[in-house]
Length: 452
Length: 98
Image 1 (cartoon, rainbow over the protein chains, first blue to last red):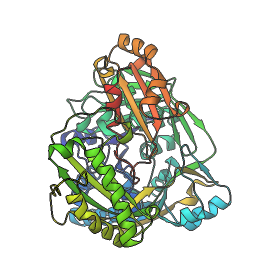
Image 2: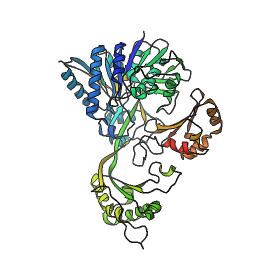
Image 3: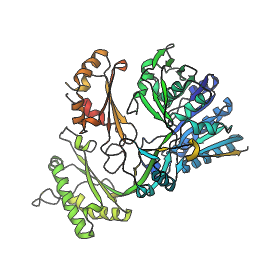
């Protein structure tokens, strides 16, 4: 059986070409699948359990997709709701969906796939030897797991298939692998397994696998031997190069992709141009393995206060590295003296913008900049301590002289107050997999109906 | 000669929070053949201060691409991270005279 999957874009919130979406709907897909998240922007979203995209942007695009779904009469599935796929962001997405349904007068069956894991259950799994580290993995213990603000397990095709089996019109998934929402239906219908995962990987970033990445909309036809892919924007084309090159993107290994229950191997895949816009792919292999799901977790690593100053005086610009080294030593001593805080209990770091702020120790170029930005980062155990350190260092960041013999300088602060309290600093603290005897045992499915 | 002057482009990006991957698009089969033979993994490891045995390298003739994947010395977004997306890392290789 062939399965036609329409992917409107790489992620909900980044936009897509509406004419291309209309072409996709006219081509009668069996399902519409879109991703809603990524770890790409850093640990904040998972740590806080919040979407990184504006509600207004999400709502506007989701509204268009809900209208397209009603027209096509097929399921609409979103993976990793609200950037991180915690239960809180699934509920956030459900709120938006119910609001739009009422507005459009749509009666819907909505399935929610919850992927959050309680620290208690993960600690129990650790105790039973069901958690294994990936490379490189931060060390974990019951104590570390207990500190996580959010832990999610990445659902695969099986959990999305369970949601599809409910007959839902709309499926709101918590954290899923990028590919699972696309591969689920073709696999369920018995299409080629290697082709299903490979095609899903190619389409997961929308039109990034084409010559016009911002057009968004991609159609994939899966069948018993492989898949064919075509962009829905008329000015976009999929070529064997654009399609095969997509395996490089954000992948540490361009040939092997691990998923729940096995891995995809594309070393033997062939990419053939069907015409100027469509590519046919066959030869990829799915290798089953014991069933594991990847875990992601974030915890609070401290609380931050930042300070920004700029140096324009040539004498200080030329000696910025020396200056900041002397300033840092002085401040550690001053903080110890006035706040009785040992240097191990907080972090104080200055980054020189214009010198090596981006690459740090890896930087191998030097130049003669016009000015240098001094970004000070204070990380402490509480926001109150970080803020107090910020206030303490503030006058010195403004006035610290390069040598004891010179007049007190005054640098430039861009705003008042010069310090900014940033709140909690989250960090990713899990790179592990969880063994599951039953794929659904770590996930929950809730089905509800909204009526117009 | 800078590596960037011999190839189409160099791109880097996180591959999850724990890895950065760097793709060298050579542009032509000739440039790929030359670089594939001439570009030493040791030199790339040294450039990024990464132990050699942790660098993954893929020479992909079909795409004229050489790909390097490196575990991040600091996890994405942790206190010492300077480049959330790892997208500036490629510049080092682009500018390198290897």
